[in-house]
Length: 160
Image (cartoon, rainbow, N blue to C red; front, side, top):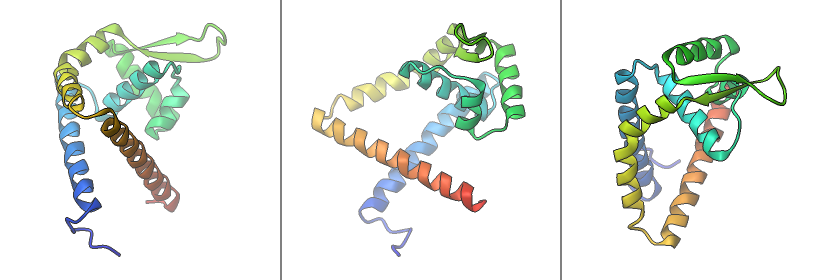
């Protein structure tokens, strides 16, 4: 087994990725604190916005699975988010039994206000790469996300 503290090859990139993740988490925590959100609330908003961008409707059941929470915890989260004006619950027009979740325009504006400068800087940085490099970076990020998902699943199955 390779030395986990090694700075060779892939280990360096893993450490760089971890450092980036920590910085992004700190920035997200600052946003959450400023707007009286729990860390899970912020993860919920991000998931809901990602689904919206993908054209996929979000339901409380989907959110529970996405955040690995039970139904009671998701209900409490949605109650907080709805009361704060960040999330709206609407009945599905095709199936009145189903609830669709959306992020309010006010919440989107708060997020854009806070994260907009970072997004602009990140897009500018990405634009310095060639299309081939961007494709490689995208493939890398998908592969790394899959690796983390696999580790998460394996740990959950092992009871860790």
